[in-house]
Length: 316
Image (tube, rainbow, N blue to C red):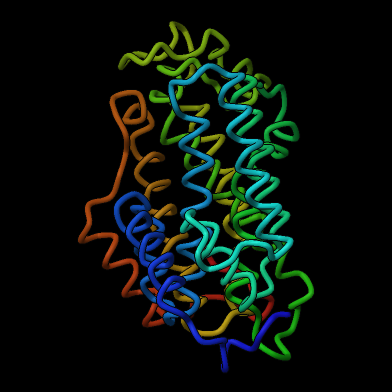
């Protein structure tokens, strides 16, 4: 039974230890994610850390050096653990701290755990080496690995009681996840190419003469309009951000600040990529820590949410 977060169930020492493990994983590996969840109250921050730790485990399996069949088997083992969480058969003395923390979080918040199944499905697409012909094809992948995370997070955040348009909150969370993932794809073009992966749709690559792919070097394919390709994808990401930001007025202040901080960091990355498209072929584009902290403070103060119209659309 889901309990009210105003009167959550007592947290035992083993559960606290499990959450502590998840928070450590988040703090060490989450980077952009960690700046946002610092703005949440304790119970929500713990739950988000449990979601992140599970997601990190899945991603690490997909990105590891194991053979594809071994990766697939380990992902299915992780799905079996998720099934135990869903069934409520994980007790606080279980040896897997992620399972313990996630089980407790799911007792406190209405987390749609099927979203974690979708995440596993998305990583299995990576393991199989799938490529994408069109944006519609890529959206399926993005919805699994990022849109699902948006919907899971909404289960923790909740919506403001009586918020107008709350019935579309899940849709907006999903769209914001797509915006973040497309930004990730642009940022990681070189890194993914080095791993033999191409995520951008084949139709888009062909349109800008980039079908030959990227070899991880500082020079785009000969005769291509790489800058045009990047600007095309940036415009698509901005449209997704504009729609996804309709979520912000539906959340309480601190949850909205968390989302504004995480999304704000990615929007700044997008700005940098737009200004210098070739930067993604020279190395990973990132923001320095002080700038991330600045974005987080703006989110908490409301500076990144006040320019939302009554319909929820942010002026970009």
